[in-house]
Amino acid sequence: MTLREQTEAMEREMLSPYACLSSRSRGRQVPLEPCPTRTCFQRDIDRIVHSKAFRRLKHKTQVFLEPEGDHYRTRMTHTIEVSRIARTIARGLRLNEDLAEAAAYGHDLGHTPFGHAGERVLAEIMPGGFAHNQQSLRVVDRLEKDGEGLNLTYEVRRGILCHTGPDRAETLEGRLLRLADKIAYINHDIDDAIRGRIIYPMDIPLSVSQVLGFTHSERINTLTVDVITASAGKDEILQSPACRDAMHELREFMFEYVYRNPVAKGEEGKAQDMLRRLFEYYVKEPDKLPPEYQDIRYEEGVERAVCDYISGMTDKYAVERFGEAFIPKSWSVK
Image 1 (cartoon, helix red, strand yellow):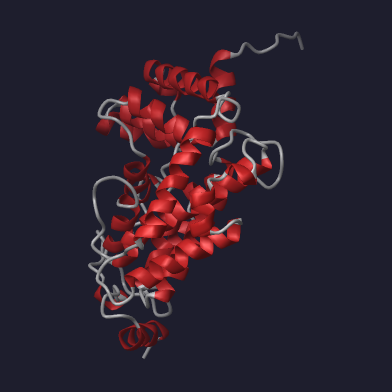
Image 2 (tube, rainbow, N blue to C red):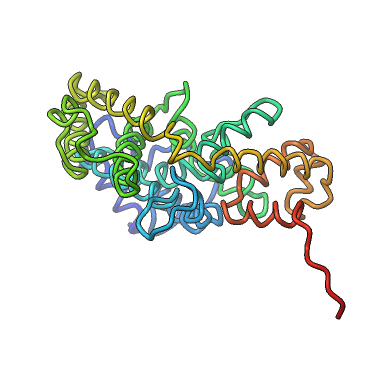
């Protein structure tokens, strides 16, 4: 018996009847010979972590554009925090931790530079619209590995796609990702906003703190334990009414005082104008797209290729490409 087969046998013995077993995955779009050491979901974790799109997350905005300081979140650190919460919930419910972790690592691979500000502008100018969860699936299916894609399992792909939007993942591991994402971003965005003096701890509504706790760790622990307690023994991922309402109130508070705050978001308009101009530039000059996007240009249209290119950019890379396209270079005689 291989190590993978031993792990699969342990899953059958130890996991909840509601868990998605690795041995019962619906498989990949292109079948692969099973790995002797890793389950299919463990293999997907490695494929995502070793991808170029995953590495680029460290230079993509979470909430604050190019913050000065070493301790503000990036899209990478957000992804890691989501993964940890997802695994904790999965462990507490005896679900498949590897599946939850793989979907968490992949959920934001298609996110734009400059956070949701970048997403909004691409949604406006891209024919047919744009959503980062759909783009994340496109990254793992079509764009990674020079156009081959990562060939992930069906369950991981559905977790990535369904972490936001109207669709629901078939697995509980996929469904818990939606809550893990919200628990992570609401709380770490509070932490960053306090660090940036956009809000202060006493600004958080007392009605929220009395339910969830008064500190960063207390809020995360309360919300995470609540999901485990409310969902235990059920074929669904749930929250208690008290925690659900408190998290909703906290999210509304964040939208009013942070996500729409003119001090925190003062530079977003500039970033959006830059992405609009870059999109127009590459649509008019498609030969200047990198070679790996030329096949997409001819197969799916120039707008699709440009959207894939821009959405994959880091903040810094987008600024550099904008400077290359629109800022005149100094002239010198050599």
